[in-house]
Image 1 (cartoon, rainbow over the protein chains, first blue to last red):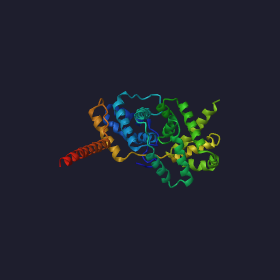
Image 2 (image 1 turned 45 degrees about the horizontal axis):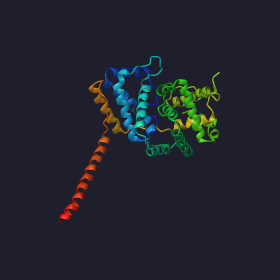
Image 3 (image 1 turned 90 degrees about the vertical axis):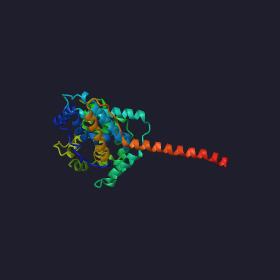
Image 4 (image 1 turned 135 degrees about the vertical axis):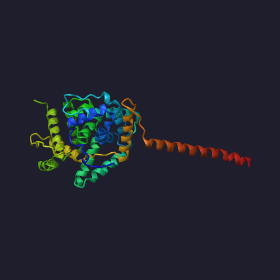
Length: 212
Length: 119
């Protein structure tokens, strides 16, 4: 279940024309929906797992999302003025609504499974120093304690690598409001991580990491 | 003049974009000292960009769902989504078996004293 890195191409920005063609093909023939499913299944699963913190619950939600998307594909409309295809935000809107229903249904949120996975993931990165691993775990805990919209915005931005415009479409906010939401979430996490961040983020360190 | 929060938000956003595009090996303008976000925020951005793990669903789950979607697509666009997860059936079956065993045990337990008293 757990794999780190960007090995399935989901980090590559969406090619608008290819994406729109794929959506159009699926609308004409539902059997073509599988291409969209394969492309986004891991992303939807990630979103669900970060929210529900349970592998089986995340699988159930992922299944619900794609079945609803396939059933409702005829109602989907591309936004002509958008730089990206609006399919992905639409898919995540479905996920958000499904999640709200799930939250109403189940009040209990098991945390142990994902926490364990996150611990493993954080310790799996051989390139990271021990200090980085400890800080990554603290950052994960800080994100978990954020209000839902802030937490979701950060997960969509960093894990699913969505643009602020796409995240805004998912969360029902303007692009500017989403940017401010993300910025404030980052400030909140920085505050929770406490002092000493200035020392760690020296200009040398910043150059070293942003260069790869 | 932009309010401070919006200015900071734009700086953070550009910085995140730069890091994500660098991973995708896309051309990206390097952030300068004046356009970079505050050190604390910059540190968190780098931490999240590197430290947030990505997960993949299991192969079995992915294939099983693909099969269900194919079946649904073959039925036509108006087919109502029916979610069937084998795990639940197994779990339900286990509960049903549990009740059966418990029921049988209860019957045996209730009959035993009667037989004993008859003896």
